[in-house]
Image 1: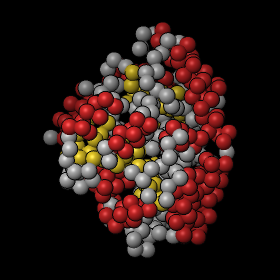
Image 2: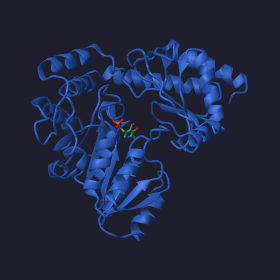
Image 3: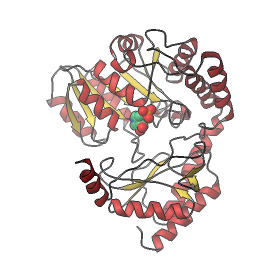
Image 4: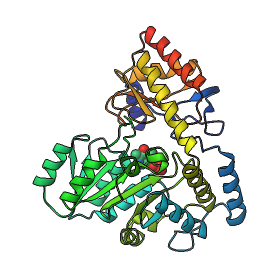
Length: 382
Ligand SMILES: Cc1ncc(COP(=O)(O)O)c(C=O)c1O
């Protein structure tokens, strides 16, 4: 039965497989025997392989061992966990924060904890899968609004009144690289007495001089705003957190099932994240370099006539006609030393290459990508 289903996926160009990397994550990676310039990671600041993160993790592994052995509520946590939580609430200017095992766990644990079956969730149609799953697990009634369409959201908030409203959105949409209209969302949430849950996975370390999407817009962290962030992307480590008011964070500690019933993050990952937050907040040049590279990539793409759609961030998609076209372009780039895997259905409706640029890329890397894409275009590949 699964054989036939797999064969059907293969015929449609939708079969996925895992490609192992045979090198550290970084600007250059070794995959499937090739040494490639990597335009596919979320390691926006190049911290995954950073020496001081490695050293911090190694020291903590020496001190605390490799596993944490229990949930945070039992004996899984350490003083390092507390320290990271304090740093993260400073980063996000909130009263408190609490760690989760991953961004997926944060979204699927926190959303059901704040929205029960009597609540109504208003969710952007392009939200990340983990937010969608969090909404499903909550059993609240979930209303989808058109992507970033504030008129549509307002109309729904006015007409669908059942329980406390909770608005759920990505800050940076992970497949298009556009930024949610957070100023309007905050105003709408205030006007309708709603909670606003922001997934800042791709904003943390990237927007607002590293502090995230609210800082980018200069929006104060009101008590009805809940910020989620991952430590697995710009922070170059692993894990995630929710930053919010003290009562809300204590509520999560008491009710979020993915926090209570899951083993705490190991201390060495926490130590790497502590170091990452220190670097993010002290090395302004690093975030500047990321944005310079982003501008250089987008300028290059526009020069060769590539439409970068709604992208406003280091995530830059190239939309393609179908899944096969995305696979062909990805293979073409691979042959020229570039790693940019195809993103296909069901992750996205329109197949694409999702390019991500990092602070670690050089001008030569970006030039190689642009030249290769121009060549692909001349060959009629897109
Ligand atoms: C917008 C968004 N939210 C949540 C996640 C999940 O985060 P994590 O990889 O830490 O589980 C991701 C990344 O995969 C993401 O892109």
